[in-house]
Image (cartoon, rainbow, N blue to C red; front, side, top):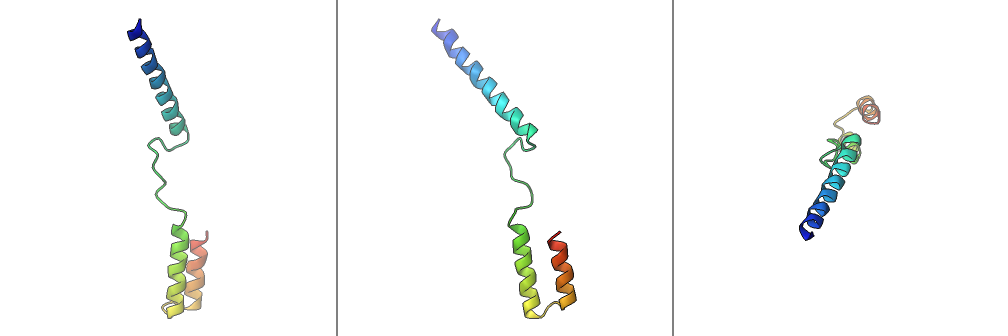
Length: 72
């Protein structure tokens, strides 16, 4: 009798794992990895662009074009 209750517990655990994994698949991220681009990556690129403009590496038109591309 005790053995059946123990196995039933594992059955519920398996069902719970399947439900969680299924939900993650539906959300598009089954393994819990973050997307390839980080949200702060755009800010970092913009800061680098501002530094290059401040150093004089870029003209104003180059800076504005690149900034527009980053903010799209």
